[in-house]
Image 1 (cartoon, rainbow, N blue to C red):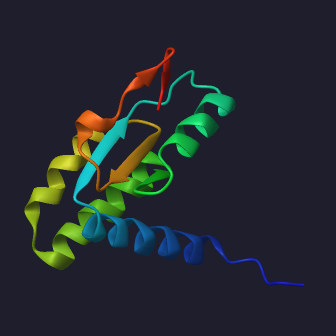
Image 2 (spheres, rainbow, N blue to C red; image 1 turned 90 degrees about the horizontal axis):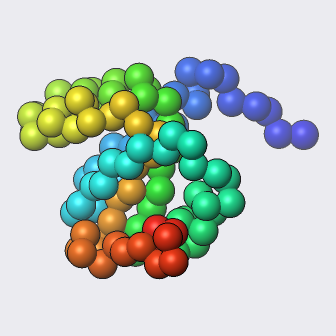
Image 3 (cartoon, one colour; image 1 turned 30 degrees about the vertical axis):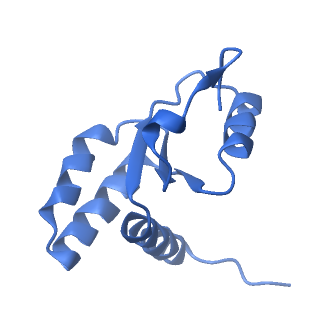
Length: 108
């Protein structure tokens, strides 16, 4: 049976993943996820598969990770994301933002 990671290890893994996504992807879209059903979120993730990644996490953990990454890299432009991170999830994409569209009332 596999050993469950501790809370500290989970936070370190999340921090590493967020920092890797920030460095790898050229565009970031922050979206509010209040009152969005799990089925709709699943459809969104399926529609974005291929060139985009959806990352969900706690607001304070996302802010902490962005702040630490900005300090580590010396790129203070990342700090502009912090006030926006009061939402449910974040998209990381290589696509142009104009390629995101609504299809029959659902985000695709």
